[in-house]
Length: 388
Image (cartoon, rainbow, N blue to C red; front, top):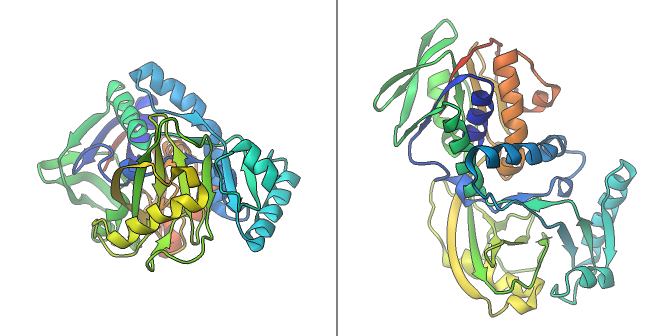
């Protein structure tokens, strides 16, 4: 997602771009995500909140461009999101968040239990209320990634699929090419957007890239018609889980449900620090399936559809790593987006494109600077780029 978004942004500006991909487009975390686009569910005091707010209005123009270039349906749906409270502490926390956001001009609401049931009748009657943002969306991540790739290709970007990037060549802080399993790819600028595998580039750039894979198990159930219309999020469920940490829209223990246009409901997801193990486990799937009725009892007998895993690229401070690689004039890192890669793809592409082609370093990049884990940096403009 991040690599294809950047390739598309650069190609639109006329840069010559080569994308090096060891498997295929959307083969990893980008194709495994739920596709939730709900920036106001983040905590307002976090740097990622500002990034999400900046990214959100970019989706409309970007998707218009992708439709014109590819005619692909990305299943971008305005559904709204309900962050549900089932205990008093969650209700107080969500009410406080709603008040703060409302005070800063955000059109979000706190709904009573009755109002929540009126908006989403199939939600469990045990609900105490909900934080409600009507202007939230979801998108099909795999379709979105493929649309970005196709639009970039139609603007001249070259894709080398099934090719391993194995290092850089260069000297004096300037890369001249990416070494690959099929030969060198020359470049005036190199962008490392290798997700959960970005830590392996530490040997290339001789600087820390502290990325680790955060495994997520996720599944879909099928119900026609779908009993829910909104994204449902709840992240303090009681008990269960088999020791799994669970990924709500924010951290903590919880679950989300996303109604897709094909009649399936996405149910996710665990957060597990188990290296590159991608196995589905009985305990995690049992927890996900067993949690559904506590939110939407009418989904109790929904047909199981499928389950899969993805490896999110996480950093120690849970913020992306975006900016010049320490000690390099023409190597940029764009990785570590953890649970926000889909949400932050448009703004990441815009920031990196301006950084490379215009030499413009947006203040939004300050909190994401790779140098926060080391020392160094630099800036240089280039019109020929390799995205790997």
